[in-house]
Amino acid sequence: MSKALIDTDVLLKTASYKLLKQLLVSAPLGSKEFGMIAAAQFVVSGKFKKKLKEPQLAEAKAHFQEAIASIAAIEPSSEELALAARLESAAVGMGVDLDLGESQICALMVSRGVDLMMTGDKRAIKAIAALKEHEACAYAHGKVACLEQLVLWMIAGAGLEAVQTSICALPAVDTSLNIALGCYSQSANLESCQEGLMSYINYIRTDVPLVLIAYPA
Image (cartoon, rainbow, N blue to C red; front, side, top):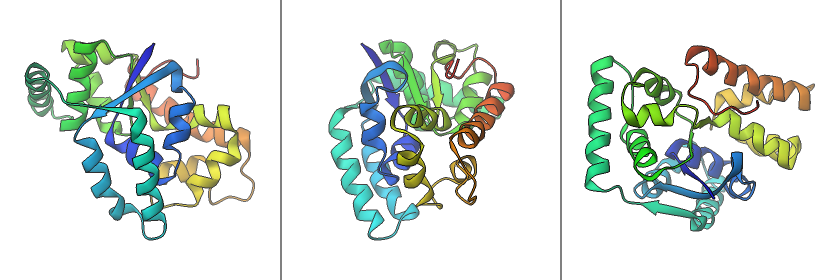
């Protein structure tokens, strides 16, 4: 059974939209088992208030607590933490941004044979590409899904309206998704929204080839 690790950005944004449970039940990109760095649940809970106001704040927190019942909270081992620290140090040396959460996810992926990283951090995607000589980042190549790919996946399964309405209702959460889904346009349709999402996906693929998973093929 395919496994996936979810970063704080994807957790925060999909829970804010109340789409995290939908993402999990959709078996994104074939994944049916999910994990997160244990500390992520506290980080995400603390960040909601920066993005949301009541009543959306309370709704997002409740949605998140329900959803994470299906996500394993993983404590990295000492060896995995040491590997993550080496990745962070290498990233600093190369002038790229790889934060604590993403470095630990990379370490967990290679040490535990995880199939997919879900991330909303485009800086981390660039860092993984830059650090391809390191085993953990080399392993992650072709196993990373960006937020736009995950939204595209949910639209394919649940339909445009179910996803677009939730995202457009909260414009402060993610500007790129608002633009891609035509939240400020009266003429947005399935085709234009798919094209909008693909423009972001293709930009990443051009900028850092081979890091993203091959979806859509």
